[in-house]
Amino acid sequence: MDFTKTALGLELGSTRIKAVLIDDKHLPIASGDFEWENQFVDGVWTYSMDMVRTGVQTCFANLKADVKARFGAELTTVGAIGVSAMMHGYLPFDKDGKQLAEFRTWRNTITGEAAAKLTALFGFNIPQRWSIAHLYQAILNGEEHVKDIAYLTTLAGYIHWLLTGEKLMGVGEASGMFPIDSAKLDYDEEMLQKFNALTGMDLRAILPKVLPAGANAGTLTEAGALFLDPTGAFRPGVPVAPCEGDAGTGMAATNSVRVRTGNVSAGTSDFAMIVTEKPLGVHREIDMVTTPDGAPVAMVHCNNCTSDINAWVNLFSEFAGLMGIEANKGELFTKLFRKALEGEADCGGLLSYNYFSGEGVTDLDEGRPLFARTPNARFTLANFMRTHLLSALATLKIGLDILTQTEQVPIDKLYGHGGFFKTPEVGQRMLSAAVGADGDRGRGRPLRHGAARGLHDLEGRGRDPAGLPRQQGLRRRQVRNAHGG
Image (cartoon, rainbow, N blue to C red; front, side, top):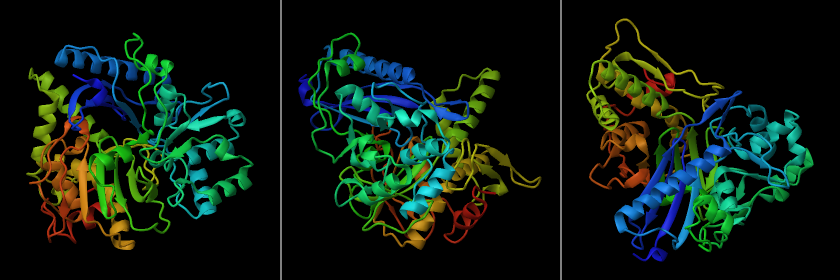
């Protein structure tokens, strides 16, 4: 096997770090992973950098073991490396590379004051999870470390820095830190100047350099190779692509980087990304980010999707164990998801709020998962699961309605990927109901590691495939009440 003709993708997701090796035909040939979870520490959702290091190295070791098992060879090099990770957040460092504050992830809703003020200043929506909102909130809070910041980056940018020594990132990832001028493929200069006038801070001095997809973003250094593989077997010198966020990798994996195409990524969080023909008006429910080559993208991002579903499935698994039944977790998910298709169109009157953490779209500062029913609600397993699956998409629908109805954004094709779509047909039908379109379940196929699971065109034809008449069901019930019932 000629490994110089392969490419290594390393992704740091919310619940799993994945390393996937693909061949010159773009097919996965080996993989490794590491499961992890964010921690809620002193009011902040975070991951420790020690866990980042442990996770990446364990993941890469598992990939090497898989290569050894499949090909009988040790992995010492590849043709190229690309890194992606959960976008946004706050990772500040001083001039010596010392971390100045805990990693504040996208999941936090602690920057409301800063986000509102910057949105008004820029005339451009700045969501709470964006890096610039975290920075300005730290300034407003009078946090001591701000004066020492020499470099501010994201998780993907941090890994790229460790691998190459380069302080840069792809334009799509950068668009989740600070607004981008798509014509110049760089930070918006007018907004940079406005922030400087407001705070006296020169952001260009501390933000990563912006690069489009395909640009030279450095090579793997000796230190970077040892970071990946402490055994020293993996050699430096491999070219590394500009790092991107999970939004950009989702667009690329689903081939939805052209104007009027889009995708919905649904896992721990869920977000829809539609490549638009032009910038949109200011809506706090809509972020304007970019594709990996800088085209404007309207994003509806929701902090909560499957976490509450996962909690209920874990409870059912615990009950099965109590009854002496050894239930495979994957099979349990599949059976419960399929059961949802048997539920009533109105979910039997059940109500679920899936807010495991705070939710910026609906102004919820902290998570409070809630399930409720009236005494005469039809409390069946099918209705229960249907309620939770639709609840996972309800907040997303609020933003999608703004895009399709208020802004009249045309969408020719929309693709779904992520854990929510792992069970064939079910997630697609629920998403189709949420966007008011039919799901063509005959197209697409699952790919490994959530890269593009269940890709299906959603083309409007008159009735929601989940059984909901267009102007009833989700459109009225889910949006009005936010989450079913």
